[in-house]
Structures are given as structure tokens and as C-alpha cells.
Amino acid sequence: MMRRTTQIVIVMLSLLLTVTSTVSCGNDNDENAEKETGTTLQTTAPSKEKRVFKIGNITDLAGPSSAALVHMNMALEDTVKYYNEENLIPGLELEVVVQDAGFDPTKYISSYEWLTERQGADLIFSADPNTLQVLKPLADSDHFLVFASNAQDILLENPGYVFTVGTHPVNLYYTLMEWISQYHWDYQTNGPAKVGVAGWRTDIEKAMAEGVEIYCADYPERFEWKGKHLRDLGFDWESQANALKDCDYILPPAGSLVSFLIAVENAGGNPTYIGGDPHTGFFKMLDSSNSWERMDGMIFVSESALWDGKDEIVMMTQELLQRYRADIQEEIKQNGYLYLITGHIYVILDIIKKAVDEVGIDNLDSETIYQIAQSYELNLDGVDRYSFTPTKRFGCDALTIYEADFEGKTLERIHEDWIPLIRVK
Image 1 (cartoon, rainbow, N blue to C red):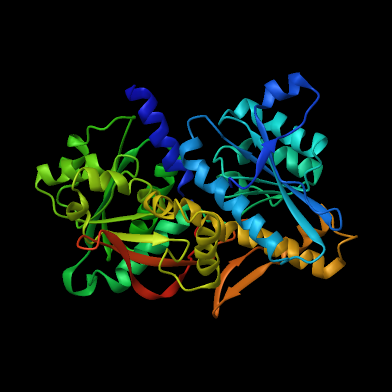
Image 2 (image 1 turned 60 degrees about the vertical axis):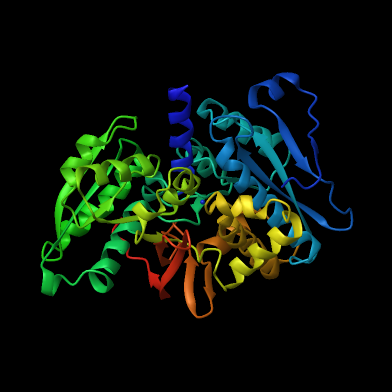
């Protein structure tokens, strides 16, 4: 049971870096193909008067990542439904075809082939954090567009047909450290702050730690690096807490946040914690363990304005919840910010819209969308939020800063302006 729980927590951590509209089973006469790739779902049939554009979604419907991906799947299908109802891309009817790969890397290629060859998908989206590593060589060879919500090092190797609207954790936490040095810690008066990291030996936590470590190496007059204290999977943090208890700032493990907060308290530490979107996926545990006070003042960096945001994307997201998820919207919000993947979906659909505007419905194809994507820029309220270039495959360009508020048991935005992302990787 502990092994299963740990696996689910790791998956949640990886996904957070993050519709049950009318759905029917997809038709497939090849029973072997159905067994190989899993259950398929399809949105309601589109209008015959418009051109159909199919977005394939490689996801996990019942496996270890399904608890997290369910809200991301909702976000994709709700946004598509909203675009269709509002006719935001005139002449185009968007359709989502869902393929269950079960968080199994051995099924990613067969899922890709089923969507592209059997279902005629025009583009593939996946929030599964492992798909990029497997699909990028195939997508590049086929000149087929794949968009993912999670960033991987493979996108740094050579530009191709795979994009992520997100950013790399190294850049994310490097930028957070710059903000802390400018707005939260007066190193000129107090000297360098002690900072360290604790976490599991997972790729995402190693990348998060790398961003902090690189910044400390670049600016030793601002921060004294106290090391990354990683461990194998588990929830006993006594050793790491004792090693870091004298730190001014600690980046804690997202998947075991509450256990670590308690361990540091028991060790006599009183740091300011820092973190990001992955940590918000476990806020329910803060309530059940009365740990909001332990986390009070924790600084969060995010790719999005959160639920209090007033930009076009967040306002659209609030409208989606009211229109399609009114009965469970509070539950969705309490489960962190996975549903706010709508920001990523917005960018993808905006790229498609620009491609339609450029060449028309009849001439829309994958290559046209690819060319539009490579020069895409999105500015909202005077802020450069997302962009791609012929050599840039990580879309996010700006971040927000929030602080945990014990009394309100929420996150409060403490820096009104968007923070430009600093790229070191």
C-alpha cells in the first residue's frame, strides 16, 4: 500500500510542474489495437458544416497518474467545447480524441500511431510527463506537431516538432532566487542567506535543485549554498531536516511537503520555504494535518496568475468552471492549479487560430501550424507571456510570485508585476 501511495505522489509531483462533456466510446474494429493502447473516448460529433480539426490527447484514464490528469483532461475538453460554442475559430470545429496510454511508456508510440493513422488527428497534446522523451524522435521524423504541458531536457537538444508551453524547472527556480535577492532578502545588510534543498531523487526535483544551486554559484555574495539533500522514495526526513535546520530558505520536497515541514519544526528550524506549482497539488494535506501555520510565508513562483488573476486566460478559466463545472468547481480549486493548464491550451488554440487567419480553413495543415508556432508571441495586458522561435521550444516567458497566508489558508500575490523569466538552460 505504501509503495502504491508513493507512486501516485510521484506522478502528482511530475504533473504539477499544471471534460466530461458528452463523451462516447470511440469505434475501432481492430480489437488488438484497442487492447494495445487502452480505452478511447471521443467528444460529441462536430457540425458537418465546418471543417473538423482533431486534437489527440494521450493521457491516463485509470492508471497511477489519472487522479492528477483528470483535471487537465477536463481543462482541455472544456476549453475546446468553449471555443466551439463561441465560434472563436470561424469555420473550424475542434474535436478531442482521447487515447488512454495508462502512464505506460510502452504504449506511447502505439497511441501516437492510433491517433495519427487511425483517427486522423491533426495535432497531439499530452500532459503525461513521460511522453516527450518517447515521441519526439517520431514526431520530428513525421513532421507532426506535438504539444506537451511538461518541459523535458530533450527539447534542448535540437528544435523540432514538439513544443511545451511551460518552462524548464532550472529556469523557473533560478528566476525565483533572483526575485528573493531583490525583494525578500537584504544581502547587502544581512550578508548571504543560507539556502538548501530537500527532495526525492526524481528528475523534476533534481532540476528544481539545480536552478537554486546554479544561482548560488553565480551570486555567492547573496546566497550560501547548503546543498541538495535528496533521498530515495520515502517520508522520513529527519536527516535532511537536521542538515538544513539553520537555513534561511529551504526548497522542500513537493510530494512529501507536510512530513518535511514537521521534521524541520522538530529539528528546531524556522526557515522561509520556497516552492512552485508542484507544491500546490498537496494543499489538502495541509488542512488534514493543520500544517498551514508551518507553511505560513512560503514563497511560490508560478507560470500563471492563479485563481485571483484578472488576465484574459484566468477570466476565461473562471468562465469555464461556471459554465461546465459549477457543481465541482470548489473541489477543482482545492486540488491545486492543475485545471489552470487552460493557459497552455489557450496558447495552442491561439496558434491554430492564427494559422487559419494566415492561410484559411482549406489550406490549414500541420506544416502551416508549425511555421506559425515558430514565430508565435502572446502579449496580455502589456506583458510578454509566451513565445516560440525557430530555436526556442519552451513557451513561458513570465512568472508570478505568491505567498502562503496562514489565516486565509490561501496564496496571496505579493508582487503585482509579472517577473520576466531568466533562461540559463
